[in-house]
Image 1 (cartoon, rainbow, N blue to C red):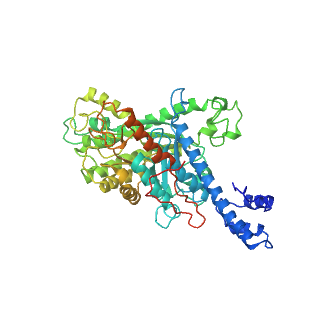
Image 2: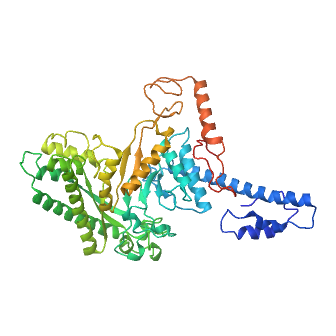
Length: 526
């Protein structure tokens, strides 16, 4: 967009449109338009026209930036309010971004982050999309990288909104697929951890676009540990018996996944008018409405998961992987064994079997309840409400961030179907985005594939304050359950609207300093 209404009577606007349309990016040298200004006119008039050309260019970029912010604001709002999943839920959506260095890409990334920072309605933290910022050396990790300012902004937004999470493209198992200039080669993650990349079915199509996880089933590691370990009074763990039953469980899950795949493959293109009928899924554009899906679904993944490695190790050895070097070695041996089984299934069936560190939001409670009914209350194993998520260090164990990441990182290389490392921070991180950046760098250096940073984010539903709330809201002085006078509510909500919605954000696409927006400024544009 190029606004030249103030000059159209004095210049050849048709030629101006052709010159602007020929530019590859919205950032270009405005001086190429100076030749449109006649040289034989009054010097003052010529100077005025030259200045107006620059003003019009800056105005056009500013308006484009503003429209982009509003589009990102609408995207975030729609993904949190459109109950189109199963007729009653909003879609579980994720967006990976951060590596596009073009002016247009940077503008979209910046404004998506600002829209997430602004929040929904009365500054409420949006749940969707799960925002994932891709970190890459040479792109945004170093201070001299073109998108370093966007990484800084991402850390600032995370300090307030918990998102974005961070995907690390320099981790060896992610870097192996990376090809500069080919976005499809950049490993992406789904929400809480799912990763799809390797494609044994079609090596030429080892990309993230047009693929997904078809299904996964989780193995209850604590139960195997209890049965074959020392938790029930045995003097020594029966490791041969443990691995024999683990192999049997993996084979059983494999058979179950193949059986489910057969059912999925019998479906027809017409059953999935968007995913298949619109050509979203890889190679689906080659199919007719009555065709079945077996050939195209083979681009997806069948995944085996696991839960409760920490409790499993306690049952086998008496200590989990953060308490003992030997337990850590055994943990890697167990998960490495499961990965080897998945790889063998890939070779045998020429299908994409993978291993995932299961999220298990509900399963962590269900499995421990079943095991408690079967084996009773076992200290440090079933004497709680939930099993520890996948290969994570027990949440109650006191450990430094650096050590926690060092212990969990090796499992990311083994879990090619997905993984995540969580870091829990105390205190009000909204005032300290540098702390977020420090954790991001720790994750990068440890070899983490995908990480998230959690911290307290309380919200007063009356005045809208977001931060840490004890017994009394720091903004309006309200205690839980108390009412607040309407004039006080209007006062605070009015100030919030101005703070997050009205004030302008400096334009990062200035022709002179294209990367010059202030990451310490907490105001937003609209």
